[in-house]
Image 1 (cartoon, rainbow, N blue to C red):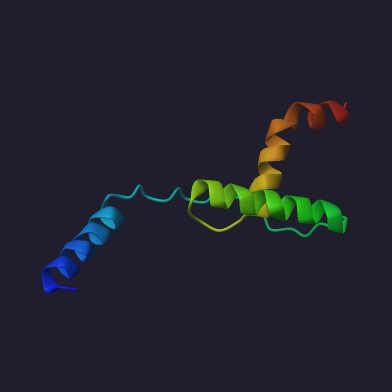
Image 2 (image 1 turned 60 degrees about the vertical axis):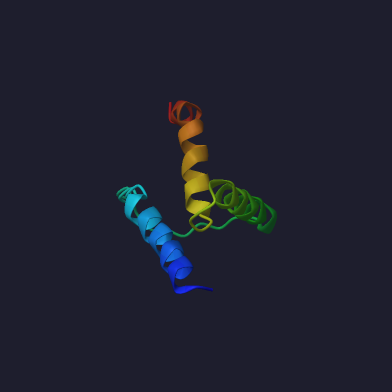
Length: 82
C-alpha cells in the first residue's frame, strides 16, 4: 500500500468519525432486576441482537426492547391500574 493511499484512507475514516452524529445522551432511568422465563429472555435477546444488526452499530440492548414494548402498550398498562 502506498503512503498516499494509506493517508487517503485515514482521512476518510477521520472525516467519517468527525461528521458522525453525536450520540444521544442516555435517558434518566433506574437499574433493576427482573425474573423472566428463559424463553422470554431468549426472545428479548434475539430481538435486541436483530435491532443492533439492523442499525449497523451499537450493542444489543434488551432494556431498550422492553422500554419500547412498555411504551407501545402504555395505555393498556395504565388501564390495568383502574
